[in-house]
Length: 112
Image (cartoon, rainbow, N blue to C red; front, top):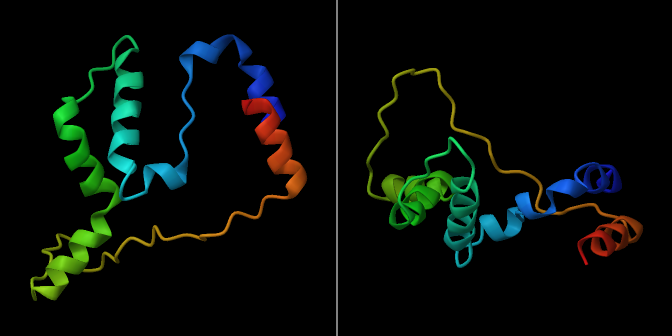
């Protein structure tokens, strides 16, 4: 699977970015990863990114929104909902990645 995508777009080596989910959602590295993505996307014609100074705030609002929900719930504030039947997002997923040693080796060889 990885071989297919890496080989299919070899001509784009200078025009692609690799983003790690773990790094993007990390409390210490996430905002910097979002800034890196913003700068990369800003190189593309027709893309006008937000100001770099705003990226950490937007990152925190989008990626770490559950932290702000916990804080607001602790202060007894309720979120106003336009749709009373709306359920909270279930963006939490598995924390383990079931990669086989062979798949990890193949991915590592491609990236090196």
